[in-house]
Length: 259
Image (tube, helix red, strand yellow):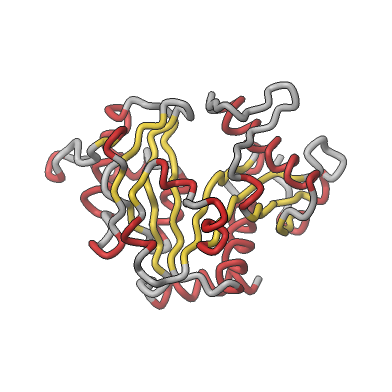
């Protein structure tokens, strides 16, 4: 049964135990559920982690009614990297998949989003909204102008996602001043079906919920998908420009940040 919103709160990870709880949630979702892997995954301790983790802020969704759980009550995670933090690493995480030059030279304040996940029993209801409230508060506090990050289809056969990928390309491709491009070593064209032949309704229904949430807030996608065989995903890069959000979208987003 899904918990009531009153038991759900967000905060940034503060301690090594907080970070381990986040990595354990990520293991449950990305490794156990999706089948991802990587050189830094710790199967003994059930931690999905990588070398970038120490440089990120980790936004935690905590269920106070589950505080005795092995994950410390953490039931959802967002990994956040501001541009000034990325300079300590020398790159954004998603630069392994996308050429971000057009964003990095824009002169605008950037925030990379990643590793967004919820435990299965918290999906489809208030939990994602509460997590987004925390994200909106973070964005407003740091005066972020552009948010971006990769979101995934589970699997590495793009033909299975031809409808959604084509819909994203035809209807939600980023304008040129935001249009990042997938790196050529694993570039996958997204316009697999011509628009007149596309069942747009079925394609949108087959689009992952997180991607649809970005689109509702006026998000765009970069050019091309990236096939990530190690992570068992087909990735798209989502970009959201706060200046391009219409009045209604901005009102919803800023209201969420004040909840």
